[in-house]
Image (cartoon, rainbow, N blue to C red):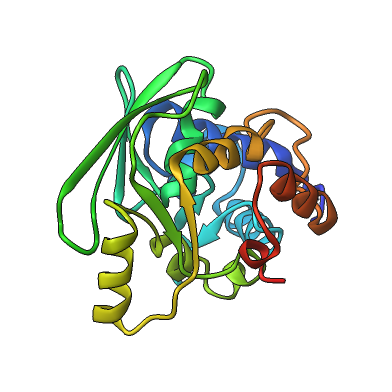
Length: 226
């Protein structure tokens, strides 16, 4: 990723995007970013394209921000309520990550529905310990293939009542079984994955470090796609 676009610091742009999501729960428009950074609209558009190529953001065909993991601009199955702010959780992984990333939110209420039986599911998720529950997460797409279609992959990282509901949904939808995690493992996965993302100088994990992290929280090679 380039460091600047026509004199605009790309790290300033990345932090402005993430800061807006963290503070308001919404994605900033290119026009709002241009005004905030005192730069031209075209510089912001070019900068966002660079951030998208480096997988810091996900853009729609019109250049609007869809996701800046773990934040989402559109509902993909999860709501995450803090003390004063409501976020869309892009997936089970991202929804559980938010209290670990946001310093002013020691816990959040994560809510969703079981894709199989439509039962309402909710947990208070904090930084101290996993929430209690027998529910499970099912990740349809291996992490190594997630960026082939990241919106599809994220929208299919869902939480179910139990393994029975996972089996019912797979049969009904015609999908092949992916990777199933209990709540403890999901919480450990989310706890440090996005560490430093709201800080200047954040660098994405390279594949070898990512694989080490995943093994460290108890995930096998099938989760990564090996």
